[in-house]
Amino acid sequence: MKKTLFFLFLVVGLIGTSCRKNDDIITGGPDPVIYVQTQLMGVINDENGIGLEGVGLRWGQQLTTTDENGFYTFSSAAADREGTILQITANGYFDLTKTVVPIPNGRTWTEAMLTPKVLSGSVQASAGGTVTISGASVTLPAGGIVGSGNVPYTGAVQVYATWLDPTGAHTLARMPGNLTAINTNNESGSLATYGMIGVELESPSGAPLQIAAGAEARIELTIPDAVLSSAPATIPLWHFDVVKGKWLEDGFAEKVGNQYVGTVSHFSFWNCDVFFENVTLSGRVVNLNGAPIIGIRVRATMVNSNPSISASASAWTNDKGEFSGKVPAGETLLIEVLDQCDNVVFSQEIGPLNVDLDMGDLVVDLSDKAIAVTGTLVDCDDNPVSDGYIKIQVEGKTVLLPTAADGTVDAVVSTCDADELTATGYDVANLKVSPSQTYTITGLNEVALGTLAACDVLEEYIHYTLDGVSTLATDPGAGIQGNFLTINGGNNSQDSTYYYMTLDQILPGTYNPTTLSALSFDSGSGIYYFGSCQGCMDMQVTLTTVGNIGEPIIGTFTGTLNGNPGNPMVVPLTGSFKVIRDN
Image (cartoon, rainbow, N blue to C red; front, side, top):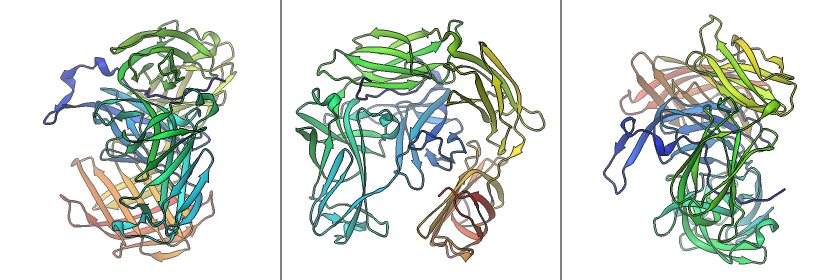
């Protein structure tokens, strides 16, 4: 198998062709910020590529959580055309920030894969020391660690680290951002990576730690054999800025044997990369009949580059068959379309590109390896479900088809040589799911799913009333780590509701929570209500049942929270929950 490095290539809309009359332009800086309307949705996977339930996401002012399939959706909102920030958090995983480039006036699909946060090693801050993980190592300076408020810290330092292999199949999904970058000349571009490392430092109690001002830590990253010969002797270092959502140039690393070695002044994610200026590449994938193909992979690979770098990246088409993204300027690219079984079904060499290029329709012949899927999702009263999706499972692969306003789906799905597919409908707004149905597709070019009725109630919930507004939070998650219990959940994106609670008790009883935040939206008045607390002496949580993993955690809560400006300073909150424990 050919090993490749990765450069930026995103599933976004036809960025260069949207009409300005539908965009909001905010000026006042050196470059105008152009806002476009988009609806953001996608899937968050665990390290095995399986959809992860109960993941918390924030996009602008909206909050939500993933459902049992890892699916999430946000309502349409204004977004920076050049990229906005999607923050992703889950118990037991490294936090992840993705940079999303929106499809104007459409749906933007973004997937990500979370990395387990596992203790890599421990050193004494006063003495310093080295922690080694697969593919990398971190050396902390003696006496160079501080805690909150930059207070010197001398105790044990717990090191959580992860190395991202530049030739790894899942590096693009696991890494922060999207490899857009700003160099020391304040020029924007994209990167080809030779490896990344993410590091978090904590005290044994979980308090965050950092490198002291004026001190430096040493990082060593393995250069895989497949790209060792093309690795430059000196390479820029870049750290990820979670506020800007971009990689910023900050120092350099030297090639020593089969490693890059450098020093850093703080910890987040660090990256060894070659910088390229950008152009936008876009297009649409259709079948022989001109129908768009959803969820099919498009791969771009640099050829005959200088320096000689075998760099590539992939995108997946959206519900209109579209793909687009930033790719290196001045480079010849091999564009390939791959089916669900990774067979190349389209190949074309383009470039060198010095201006944006819309490739138009890429026509692929999937013959008997794809099928047109149509169907309708309704609720129990036969009303169309507009805020939902139909999950298609075929040949071990999963494709989620969002419903249109009339509850319908109409898409071409790659099937390889499968004889059957399974379809399940989800009503995101009402916490309902349809029975799964299996269809025989041997020898067929199309399959009509018919009407799927989402009538079965999902078995978990968080129900609360915040300042008189009743809310049912969907897709909840619950977990226990040590003596800390966490419960969180969010409703559908149009209501933008959210609930998050932590508790330093794990046995039945009545307690004050450590933290609690709740958000509700009153659709009648159009007002958002928010409340939160730290320490939460005016809030009581009663745990009636604390099950094992896979069993429910059941309880109630009542009290008051601190309101946000525009709401009363103190807001009442009451409610109950039944959430299956994840860990």
